[in-house]
Image (tube, rainbow, N blue to C red):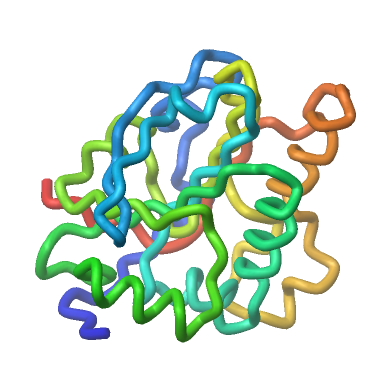
Length: 201
């Protein structure tokens, strides 16, 4: 896919905790998004299930780290098999790095053997701005009552090196495991790392 704009990186150290758009413990903002097959999805319709939101940009080296290695697809399959709803969200604006048409995204998912519940196309950035998504990837976990229980990085290795995945602490899996077991999420908020989300404004 064509990368028109270079990937600008957000340094983890520069992301202040207050910069996050939604607060852990609050109700997750409702939204309606259309996926790459033209189907509409409303977050509130997922009540009763855990939901993961994964911000995505196929031109970002941090995203590529997790997809080229198969790590993101493994997580998607593992958790959707356990009943979790997993939305990949693409908020790149037209002409920007990571922007895709529906056909391009379907081709990409097939090529990468991706396994989210759906890939939501958000070219106007409405969903991204609602959640304050900063990076690709930026991960959010929502519990069955609709509360946000995790907001931040996918793991604790803020690099583009795929070899760092082994041994990394995966915050998303940890949050889901603990919450599903009825335990409090011990690490509920971290600073996301990756490329800046390529919003239109």
